[in-house]
Length: 589
Image 1 (cartoon, helix red, strand yellow):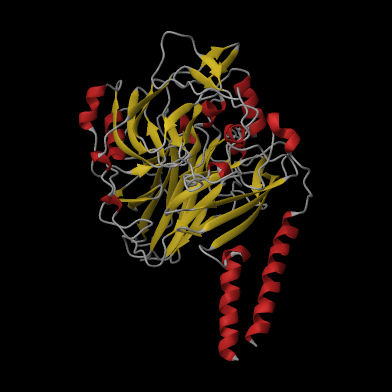
Image 2 (image 1 turned 120 degrees about the vertical axis):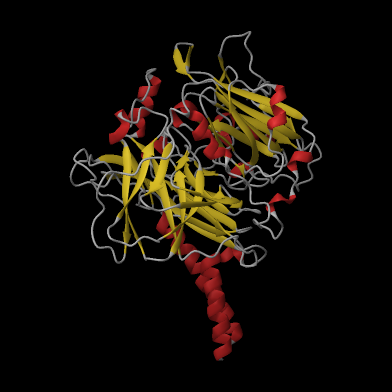
């Protein structure tokens, strides 16, 4: 009987961790997320922020390679909502991508369950609301995808893990900020930088009294993995921890050659992992700093995120001036060289037990080239708009993959130019890229705007093979890193510079290509790439999910929802699990 109870306890633990639907094939994790407004004062001013399950920032989504993930999202906002999963490749499943071109929004007081697999992925990512500038008010949280136990880490297992969600912040909420953009104005300087939703430690008299700041408690001699995500609006940030080295080990799901940095630039939408060893003498606490980059840093000094690293045997508070970055943005070559130093660890395993560098991308023939050029925002039809190759994107009222499924015509055009077009004025259009499944392409992001831009491609990782100042030309292919370039999903492009990436179009669906800087994204700097396998047999792309939402030209197909609370949904799943366990226990006894 004791052994049977032991088996029963093991199954209960597995079920609670994996969810009732996970008892066959790959395990599952199940989350219920209620997205709502709460009042918070991260910079000392009460304001409306977006919380997930009542907390800001939101809770972590944790999974393991190849796990199925289900997230039942309840929209308690007063406007439509979509959550997107930054860096999760959504293999064969653009239906779950959570952007307006592929999903109908979740109406207020409705819910929708996202269901996807973290197929052959490991690493650090994050989720956020993709509509209506909502990320400027919160709604974001970390995603951690762990290795399977049989896959070794390329470093000693850390003694603990810490997540930092850093980002610029305004004391006005997202509705006010988007109205500023709608009026044709720039947002101006942020009011501060947050670390995990908290304002700065009072390191000098410029910081008001009473602001809650982030404190990280550590033990001397131990090593921690710190996962850092820039979830902000438009500001590149430099991260540093006073008197401590940052050993970079992971870049958006890829292990890199381990390199020590005293500080590191993290651009909007990017994620990294560092190992930090607590090797100081704990004579005091230490500053954790996230400060604005590529701006007038003297003017922006008050826009600095400051937290505290507290040793368990610390003898006093942090004091003195904040540490400064090791590179000066007035010397852009040195700043770019930090990013160029990120190389793939070709001898380590990733999500599978084979070396990450065994895929020789540099030996594959390039079958197509796309040059995406960004220019400063311009007036189109009386409104300020941001463009990509002269097109400011208009999302159709019916998501494009849904339109394909129901054979709707005229929803979008497949005429997005593969190169900049100078012989016609900028325009508004629902224009996307039609690409060939399994082709191998190079994409050049050319930034002729005045700010650092971060570009992201949903559903994919790509090899960052080169970056330089000036305009890209064909002869620059001779400078590409064709052996150990890092593979990632979000890459920075400096003003007056270009970044080249290589990618295999092996993930069927319709995928968003966007700038992560929210102000430019909101003004139209995005498009989509449509990758359809003409020999589709149900194996390269999943079909329309049963719970798909309908809108636009198909809204008449949408049935009314029977609304239940998030807590009742969670309790219902627990009851199902418990009932199943009772049946199993009876059979064992």
